[in-house]
Amino acid sequence: MNGPVDGLRKGEVNPDVSEPLLEVRGLRKSFGDHQVLRGIDATAAPGSVTVLIGPSGSGKTTVLRSLNALEVPDAGTVRIGDVSVEFSPALRGRALQRATTRLRAQSGMVFQSHNLFPHLSVLQNVIEGPVLVQGRPREQARAEGLALLERVGLAEKAEQHPYQLSGGQQQRVGIARALAIRPQIVLFDEPTSALDPELVGEVLAVMKDLAAEGWTMVVVTHEMRFARQVADRVLFLDGGVIVEQGPPAAVLEDPREERTRRFLQRLI
Ligand code: ADP
Picture (cartoon, helix red, strand yellow):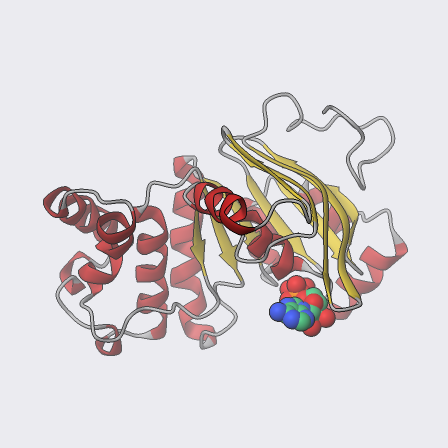
């Protein structure tokens, strides 16, 4: 590796290249004849926050879902920690299943809409992954689950059901659930875009806390203030490629590419 990384300014040293926790090389994905990802290369250092921005349809969600094999890329390598998967048409059947299971265990995913099970309590939702998928002892998972609910400010809601919570609280449970599997990285797919505006702040506040605690995070969001304040790196995608990337001050305040400038201007 140590090859060129898309969108870096000439002469800029990518601070992530030395010891990345996440590494993506040559990621490609088509749906039918629509080529959605056209070769994505990116890295993320341990403890860093990477924010993906770009127009609707540019491929942000597909990148994120490829990182934990919710989408199976046509080509490219995804490495998280010591699990590396090289996707190709040759990787299929049982071998593909094994590879995707290993990769999926490396990351926790927070979806746009929380996807909590309505018939389970808040705590049961949080410990479902550790107990049923990872086979951890229920008592240990309960203790950890309660600690995670405490962390997102919802310990007192543990025995309630999702419908008794506000949208922001449900999304915070979604974050606790993503952390419960003890992932290496946490992936957020537009975690606040389905929320009423007054509920967005509480979710972003939890995400900021996690960033400050040193979680490695990859976040698809339109919340530019969050990107400015919390991101270590911002990646601007358009048409399935990374057009530009760098620290938020560079990409958001002083974009080099016309396409980035036009996108940011439309947001104002
Ligand atoms: P973004 O997150 O930037 O809005 P997406 O990654 O969601 O973009 O989508 C990129 C393109 O891929 C869009 O044109 C979308 O319609 C298409 N796409 C995404 N998922 C699927 C799918 N499962 N089947 C067909 N097309 C898809």
